[in-house]
Amino acid sequence: MDKRKIIAAAAAIMLTACAAPAQNTAQTEVQETTAASVEETTAEQTTAESETEAVTEAETTAETTEATTEAPAVKAFPEFETKTDEDVVKADDNAEVTLYNGKYCNVSITNADEYSELAEGVKGNMKVVRDAYDYNAGEMKSMVHEHYENSPESFTGEYPMTYYDFSSVSVTRSDEKVFAYVVNNEGYSGGAHGWSMNTGTNFDAQTGKELELGDICNDIPRLVDILAQKLKDNYTWLFDDNAAWVDESVPYDEKPRTLLTSVYGEDLCGYDDTWEDGSVYHMNGMQFVFTPDGVTFFSNSYDLTSYAGGTQFMTVLFSEAEGLFNEKYVCEAGGDFSVRVDYGFDICVDLNGDGTAESIVVGTDYDEENWTVKGFYVKAGDKTYPLDHPVDEFAYDHGVLERKDGKYTFTLYKADDEILDEIALN
Image (cartoon, rainbow, N blue to C red):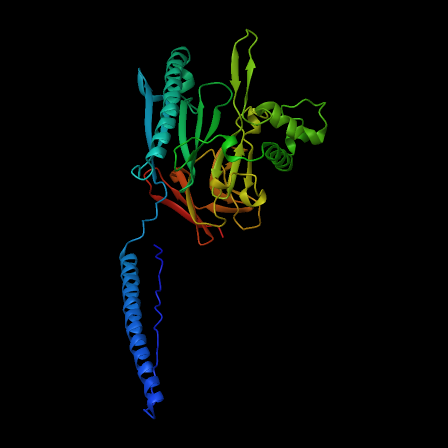
């Protein structure tokens, strides 16, 4: 807690009066005159000293009062907690057969007395997420019962099928300016492969307003150019292999920008389109989320390419694009932070201070020949840290990335918050 120190200084008035002994009448008159003058001066001096003492006393009193008055407490950062609900459906005729497995993760603000508007905003957003999850879970449960009735053998044997719908939350930034998180939904409901989706949500921590791209970005065309270049540099295969959803007739150098604006709109905020029957629907804009060092933009499955192409992440650091983002939401460079990272989202920060973003990912090492899991690792930028845990005992649930005094630590946790592992990244 910073306190100002006030130093009060009072100037003392020093006066000296000198009188000579009487010599003659003239001298006596002068002496008398001088004595009167000295007496008057002494009176003025006494008054001035009294006034000075009064002022000094008042200043001292003010200093003492201000020194003993406590400065307002610094507002804490938003504090949060996550809670996961699980839902398992067994076959009616065989309790050993799992038909459906659901997990829903909720995030809430715990110091709502300091961030009441933010707490209400997060609560409202999570209700929308929960309603969508519950609707989808109901549909999947109905489907899986029908599937089991028609093909019970699909849910037994060496590789039994199970429908699932998992929801997790990564809190990517939490400070006095911004509270941001990504909800990851992934599941399987039959067919060749499952599905996944990431949704970024960003709040003004002071007002509780959910932020849109126009609230945080000062120059959308410049942003589109930056993202197009990152897409071209980091996902070259999209264009070299003609894997992107963009017409082959478009010149190569124009493909990244054309791809982004055709999918997400010229301002990346989505657009309205029309079905063949004339009904109007809205195409979503590009997802984004604040991180400690910048803003990460990301696609979802089928946005830019096929399901096999996965998700594309592009992080724009505050340091590499000065003036691009609203200064109101920009972090202090190199400041301390702690963020929660879950499966499905790559958190990106500037690990070594070189002005580029490195991702931190918990990965699985597969034996592709035998279709088995060999182990797990943490990858941070170009460094890989193998995790020495038996495969059948690796109960990773989420991670926490911290930066303290410039040092990065990634801690892996189980669902009950027991620590699995802790890795120093630099």
